[in-house]
Length: 98
Image (cartoon, rainbow, N blue to C red; front, side, top):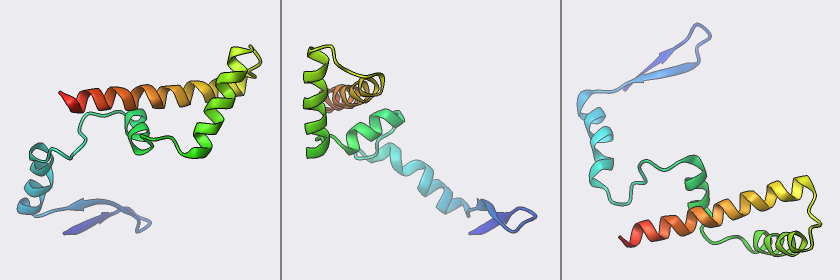
């Protein structure tokens, strides 16, 4: 393996021998555990597939405030993000069951 550096000496690239390159590029196709074609949001949701207790509590509070139409703009955004994570996680679970 060789590194390509810029004028400042920072590593900006790498040169691999063909065997290593083929091993790295072909492995994911045969690995059912490899998460190909998932968006950043889907990967984040999967990483937190079960909401942490603090997030779950926050979600409960935000849902209650939403029911009473008392959400601030920032809280509404937070609620949307939490709900998106839950939706994506549910979708991923359904996809895995196929």
